[in-house]
Length: 293
Image 1 (cartoon, rainbow, N blue to C red):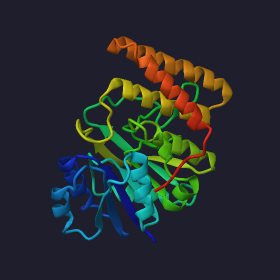
Image 2: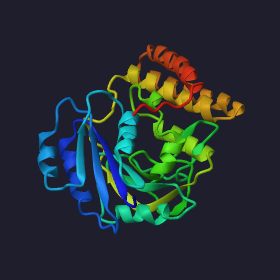
Image 3: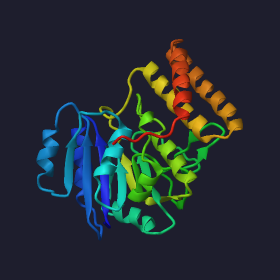
């Protein structure tokens, strides 16, 4: 069915989510759309439930049976009723033409995913080649704050749209990348997406501002747990998507990152987390992507 299913995974961010919803209900789009909230907070969000009573196109799903951003994204896709899926962070602000700008290029037969513009309110918006995946280091460059319209290698996880049929064809987000911090799951998805011959197109005008809430979400506060997730998920990308000669350079770059963290935090235990993540990542990289939701 023609239209958008907007999927918003959320965790303990009531105030930010409410502001996001207040922008989304003002969308000016010629076809119908729905908003699917996938809340993995411990308790149901009463404030959000009260707000959405006035909007029959917003559904609220309080999930306690699983945890993880990939699972929440796949769950949203399973419950979506429209042709296009739009994934958004829960702490954003956007203009009324967000859906229309995503639709301009999704309506084209040769484009299956649109990477939207993302301006970070409190983080550095570093200039770089927009949406470039650097194979020799396994580094996804962002640059989504820059103006332009062009084909790219990957999209930012907080603002991308995709045709539901292709999302299903590719296998959705790999739920094996859900351990710890949310790292590289959309990169892996986009690389699998392009391997199947589909095009990812960047449209800066499909823009939002990311507020980067300091609390909630899928952050990992413990540095050793973060390093484990970083090493594990980056290793999955390295051994799943890179040519053999870039495996070497990408692993050296990862070690360089680990040394930097070890020096900065003065914690030699970081190397144990790196080793455990590396070992687990190599194991998972040999397996097909997993979707249970």
